[in-house]
Image (tube, rainbow, N blue to C red; front, side, top):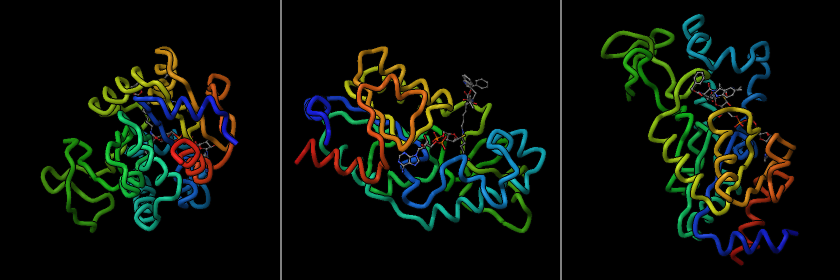
Length: 242
Ligand code: BJW
């Protein structure tokens, strides 16, 4: 089912980099970013909810949107796609997993080296001080920072905000050194994450895409694996390392 050239590229590679997006968690029951805006939230565009300006305009609504998603994330479990990547990490000498997801499912599947570009929905930080807090009082919505009294917010990266520098540097360095780069379950529309596969390509990597749909990256990929990552990735790992 897989091209022999793809299998041998992965089998012989010393440095493999994976970038994941919301699609890898879809089969765990986490709606993809845009699909998350259904039902109660269907009147909003992501760019209007996931920004500091949106939070300042309507902090209660934005906090509640994230509280609902935090609750959902805690209830779901990793799927075979997450587990296949944890297995890939054990097989490849130098492996980097970069995720745009905030759900922590890679870590729960056993992946150890995970770079989170857009934060983690399980953490909460002070809007003013930018420091994480571990306990808060929910009597006001949003709750207040126990140190300075400002609003608390989720520790995620909104549009218009800088990505954590350490994560961005690690992701960029790994991408520039990749022999094989896999882009999995991402629409490849949001920057700077969308630059990583291009950076890998510029340095000669073999680009592999796993997605149920075409993306702007598809025509640049040497191998385009069309299908759900929860099915494709376990099959790929079994084919490369039988
Ligand atoms: C399956 C599947 C299955 C389904 N199996 N596949 C350069 C050009 C233009 C604009 C910019 C630029 N540089 C920066 C910008 C601005 C902006 C940006 O990119 N805007 C775009 C909309 C154009 N970027 C930023 O603001 C970033 N900050 C920044 O660059 O700072 C410097 C700066 C500041 C100011 C001005 C200029 C520069 C920050 C971006 C932060 C993104 N944050 C979010 C929210 C996180 C918190 C939360 O979760 O609420 O991150 S937005 C959202 O998109 C989320 C995701 O991580 C991210 C990516 O989405 P993803 O993962 O690709 O999901 P989807 O839903 O889009 O796609 C799912 C895919 O899965 C689809 O392809 C499906 O087909 C597929 N799929 N089921 C496999 N089973």
